[in-house]
Length: 128
Image (cartoon, rainbow, N blue to C red; front, side, top):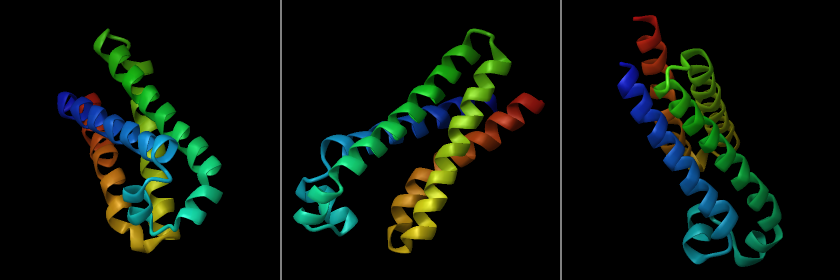
């Protein structure tokens, strides 16, 4: 189960890196604006907020990847702690998105599912 959890963690990290590119690099582009239902003026006025939020996502990805690296080098406690805490933050952020903008439920579920299952698999793998 631990291997599955690591794979799901890396998938979750990849999604966070994708979200970083959307928020920090592509926020005012047509595709991003249509996904979030923003006009160009709205995207421009929130660009700084999206830019910084994107870096939050990037840092979650880095933390979870570092956890996987440490886990693979036998640093189980530290690696698992980083994986579980980063994944929990990803799930919590997706829940905030879901509750604050229900119309973005698909986006929230896309962001929440891999880290949620990563948490379950890593925990089960550690318990075994």
